[in-house]
Image (tube, rainbow, N blue to C red):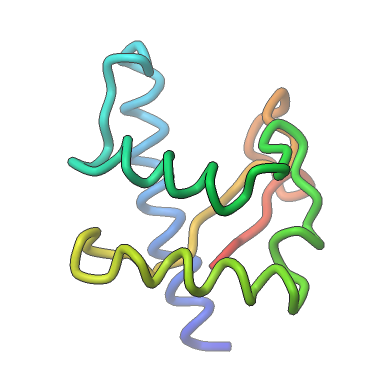
Length: 106
């Protein structure tokens, strides 16, 4: 629980920085890492049917989901600095970051 809390706090800090970035720059010109295109390409290959506009927590947190997410994240070990940190995700992309609309994924 303490490790997850530390990750959640780090994810919150990162979310604030990234939110400020994506709010001030047109996203089509923004890269958060040098390998954004690779990450997205690998993501779409691995999670072809995952709806990203309206996330189902089961598709992120269930045991079968974790069995897909772990190997995906491990592909970026040594490539992305915090490859295994958690992240804050909005469940419904049309709504803001609220307690009800946010999930911590790792």
